[in-house]
Image (cartoon, rainbow, N blue to C red; front, side, top):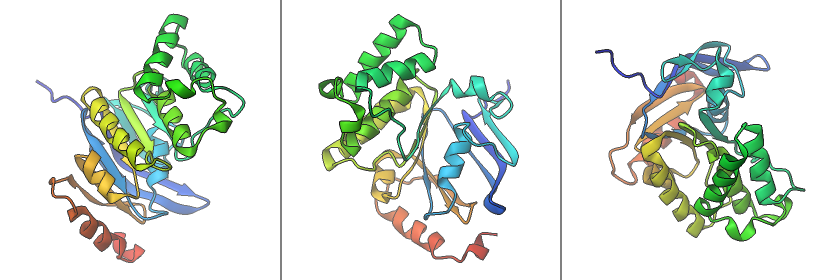
Length: 244
């Protein structure tokens, strides 16, 4: 019997921006029920990697597969299986939260009854019910990030891609994010980037560290809090040429 393919596979992915290499030979995989933390200093290539996975950018070479299917050549259908929250959450400031969610559901092609139920589900799940009639432009940064996450979950994606999901969250909201990630994990794969190593250790079971656009570390977390910091610092301290 053939082995079940990984939910997500990146195979020798390369990407250049403005003539400079941003990603070089990046390969890693993600299984369903994995929560993978993607780490690296600023400029390491984290956001570019997530944008390629989400189908927003195309790699110059290499492949991205979801359940064994090419996610680059079949980008439209693959995007239906992905929920993406970029670091800067795109919102319509003149729409209320419920209007914004409904608009996203329409763009996703959800039927009226499905869309209404999905909006109500995510308002409750992200604790946004009390601000449902508030304009998106009047929300706090933390509330905007939760609306972005609600938008990404409307269609119940198999793969959730989160770029700095904890930005702007207060300690209570950060704890709620941890609980939410734990609740979402059994049904899908999750990949997230973060600068807060303690949060990665709390939420993730695996970690990939990028340095100068290359994968320098790919391993399961051992459950020992604090160990990731030393590993990250050792890699980040290396000159870019060491990643070649």
